[in-house]
Amino acid sequence: MKKVLLILMLVMFVPAYVTAAEVSFDVEGQTYEQIWKAAITVMSEKFVIKDFDKQKGEIYGKTQVRMASWGEKIRLYIIPIELDQHYIITVKSKKKWGVTGTNWSNTVMLALQAELGEPIAQAGGP
Image: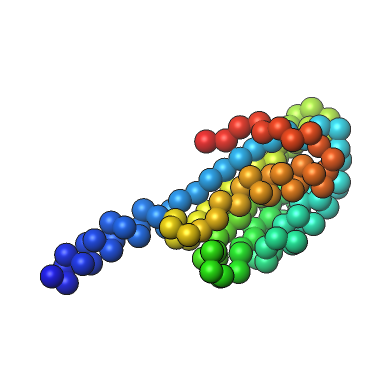
């Protein structure tokens, strides 16, 4: 009986742990500094920033554990394109437990676009 319960728990919870979402959008006509400042502002308002690397354009955050949040991980990437002042911003949100966790990707994308004064448009994501 214990083995059956263990297998049932693994089937229910292990796949949920790796639930992830990703969105990307384009930013044109803004400097890297403007985008970086907006990204830090948005991420620090919503999450605890765990790590960042300005040269690489990476910010890592995590939510607090609460009733509807189990400590999701959020990663934001600023990717320069060869054209002058053209960047792709990618936001990845990984739920710790898929049952009650929140997908933060769209929330961060919309907040960052608003902070930058960009039109709300999604470039794509898996």
